[in-house]
Structures are given as structure tokens and as C-alpha cells.
Length: 452
Ligand code: AMP
Ligand code: ZN
Image (cartoon, rainbow, N blue to C red; front, side, top):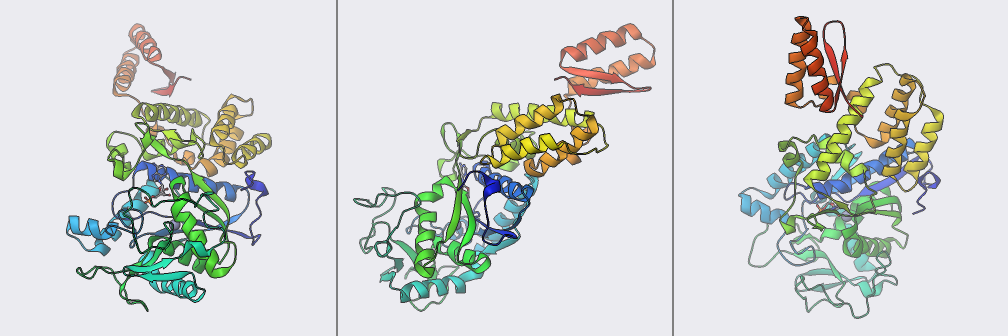
């Protein structure tokens, strides 16, 4: 993608078509996953800031994603249903709701359309029929497969070198596959076991392969060629590669004009992942006293194409900065002036520089340091927040977190002032300032601010 986003031209000048691979709803999403969705949100908000309408859709994977992430193993949703003694639909509904609730807490704007794989079985079957007619499929004992050797440029996104490619070590070898990179479009239900989710098809009862849903739903809602498609970087070599192969084989047209992938959130130097055991949820952040917005703010400190290392200390650092930002913003008062044009231009340059949030944050701190008046500063920052999405406009005094010991000192000092004990009041003020807080006295009380 031209990394100057304002130069981007959608096919329809009035609207950008934008597809995001959504979650597989078999468990709670972790904050690594939310790095991907925060990045999507920043991209969408930037496009809007640049004046585009955005038709954004996101899928919910509620069938077909197998435990191997390939064509073998148990369906992740059915496995959770078995372990939690619930129906597959109950599992999918529960984790979908949890996902949407987390998005809200992270101030991520919902897509215009949500689409579930199980609601689009017909579209997926229709796509397989087209591929079959065009000679891209073959049948094995366990399903219908896509023959990757029939496409002229399989793997172009990842620049995969297919010669000598072996199936991954984690994946059981399937001797019936013609090429290691071939993938299932339709899998037959096992003969010895009844699946909860299965459908009739011209080839036998079964369920769709994981990659198929994104192609089928993207084409249904956004057309055969879409402007932007996003996901985490792990989707490049398999999931997105296969989406391209099957979509372009079916339509003969380019599937996606611009791909954008985010790098991983790391923890203990490895990718944060459910399979690695060590992962953190939004609920856990809250339990440890972190507003989820702090995690959003933490994400702004890095570029989406760089790895980001998660530690609790780093998150605490983001929290301190966020508290400082809220305090400084409140100091500007409640009245809005006019956004400062020069700063807006600088901000636009930063966000359009491949979504450089670190650069945009520098512009934000520069606004505070500048000599424009407080009302205009406030209005300018509220404009920036349309992209940052921190909810600055809703921050109120009570939200600035003050440690308990400081609150106690302030209360003691207020009492000393009421009793006209000026000596004690001065002593306490010094103590409060030493701890990094400034006090402004009003007629009958005092107001606290974090020092720069
Ligand atoms: P999944 O539910 O596993 O399909 O993942 C949902 C999204 O999160 C995908 O776009 C993944 O690429 C992304 N993702 C998974 N783990 C991480 C991570 N540690 N850091 C950033 N993105 C991730
Ligand atoms: Zn997808």
C-alpha cells in the first residue's frame, strides 16, 4: 500500500470497502488479539479523518477453524462446547458478546456489518461450486480441496517459495493432498461421530473450511474486489494467501487492492497466544486496576508494523502518561475554541505517514507546549482524539486517579486551612508537592494537579 494514506484512492470515491478477519469465538480474546483490532480502528478513524466514508465489515468465525489451524484436528468451537458442556451456539454467542463488550471498553468503533460463518453456508457452498466448475477442486476421503498448483501465482502475498515446501511439522501429513499447500474448502463430518454443526452439500454432509468464509462474505457484502483487508501478520502465509487463491480463481479478478497487517504483541519475548498459555485478557487488566483505555494508549506508543513488548511495568508507564494527559487536558478548561490549522496539518502528516501514532503523539504533546490559547488547544486535541479514540472529551475531574495517601494529605490540609493553621497547611502543601502533585487553592477548597 502506498503508505501515504491520504493519497489512497478507493474504487468508489464515496466509500472505502474494508474487511477485517474477526475472532474465532471459542474462548475470550486476549490483548494480543486486541492489538489487531485497535490497529484496525486507528486505520478506520484515519480514513474518516481524511474525509472518506468507510464500509467496514468483520466476520465472526463460529465454525470450521480447526485446532491445528490447518485442515486437521477438532473444530475449536465444538471442542469448547464439549469441554464446557454447552452447545456450539451457546459457546459462540457467549464469546461473541464478550468480544463486543471488550471492543466497547477499548473504544473501538464497531463495524457496520457483522457476519457469522454459520449464517453464510449457502454463499460458501456457491463459491465451492464455482471453483469446482472452473477445475480448481478435487475430492479426497475427508473433503473437497483447493488445488493450489492450478493457480499461476499461489503465495504471492507472502512471496512463498513453494518448491520443496513440506507441510508444517505441526500438521499431520495428509497423503491424499496433491500439494502440501492445498487446503480444505469443505470437510466431511467424521463417520464415527455426529458433529453439532454440519450441513448438506452436493458432496456429502460436512462443514466449510476456515478460509472460505472470508472470501464468500467479503464478496457478498463488498464485491469481488475490495479496497482494504486487514489482519495480524500470522495470517499472511496461510489464511490470507488461501483467501486470495480461492477468490481470484473464482472471479478472475484482483481480490484485495491493499493489505495491511499488524505485528505481534509479545510477552516474555514470544507472541502472546492462547496456545502458549501466557496470555492476558481485558478483564485481567481491569482486575489489576487498569482502565482498558490505558491499554489502547499503550498501543499508540508503537507503530503497528513493529513488535510491541507487553510488561506490566510498561503498562504502568502508559498509565502514568495517560493520567498526566488527562490532567493537562482538564487544566485547559471546558470551553472549546477553534482547532489550530497548523497543528492539524502536522497531525495529518503524522497519521498519514503509515499511521505513525508515535509521531502523532509528539504533535499532541507539542500542542500543550505551544503558545496558542487554552480554548484552541482543547479544540485541537479533541480533533486529534477522533483518531486516537481515547475519549478525551468525556474525561472529568473525578477520573484523574489520585493515590490514597495524597488524598489523605489533601484532606488534612483542607482541615488545617479551615482551622486557619497556616503553618501546618504549608507543611502539608510541601509534602504533597514533593510527591509530584500541585495544589491550587480556591475560596473554600483546593484542586489537585499532577506535576509535569
Ligand atoms: P484469531 O481469533 O486467532 O483468529 O485472532 C484474531 C486476530 O488477532 C488475528 O488478526 C490475529 O492475527 C491477531 N493476533 C493473534 N495473536 C496476536 C498477537 N500476539 N499480537 C497481535 N495480533 C495477534
Ligand atoms: Zn479471514
